[in-house]
Image (cartoon, rainbow, N blue to C red; front, side, top):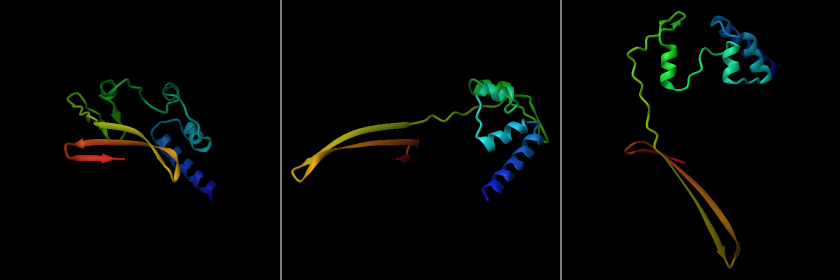
Length: 123
């Protein structure tokens, strides 16, 4: 059964790659053999179009590109919005000892992400 699933994945991925002018041979290897490449190799093998240093560089490189069946990507007047991350990490270590059991350490790590003033996610 797993061979059938893998074969279906390969067929679909190769179809998409060929339709988009990508490296269908590499796509098959990536699925069947778990092949990975660096960003430079991906660019050389026609797996990706660009490598950007940051969001501004990406916008500059893709502005004016023609996207098949979609038109031209116009980013001249685009605005980027970067979310300000608010992450707080706290670590603590507690040592418990009693006459009834031997002592042991209890480590704890706490992470808090503040999306907005009153919207927090904890783990």
